[in-house]
Each structure stands twice: as structure tokens, then as C-alpha cells.
Image (cartoon, rainbow, N blue to C red):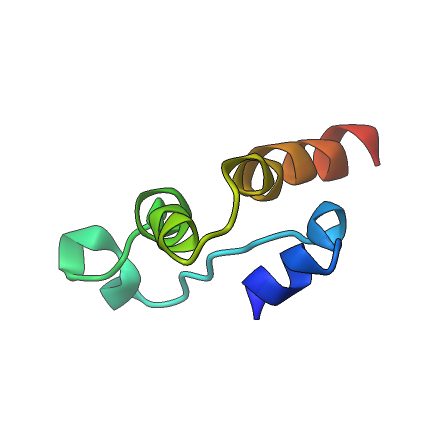
Amino acid sequence: MLKKLVERGYAGQLLLANDLCLKASLRKYGGWGYDHLFTNFAPMMRMEGVPGREIERLIRLNPSAFLFEG
């Protein structure tokens, strides 16, 4: 679904999030950890054919704009 949204031109309006609400979600206890978006999800987006410039937008540019320019 994310790839479809990017292809339709919505990449500039998307913010990605990683929810950790259980101790078991931490890497120390076998979970994905806080870096899941960068270490697992970004490579998955590349494998699915999401262009690198759009991944950069999703994981760096959009959050920066939201936090500092909003």
C-alpha cells in the first residue's frame, strides 16, 4: 500500500512511525527494536521497488519538515 501511495504522488504527505509499547518489542528481548524503520523497513521498501529518493523523503525529509518547518 505504501508503494501505491508513493506512486500516486503522496510521498510528501506521509509520515512513518514505529510503535514500541511492550518490553518484548525491544531488541534486547527479541523484538524489532527502535531502529526497525531504518534497518528493516527501508531495505524492504527498496526490495519492493520504491525509489531511493522517495525513501529518503519518507525517512528523513518529511519528519524534518514536520518537526522543524511545521
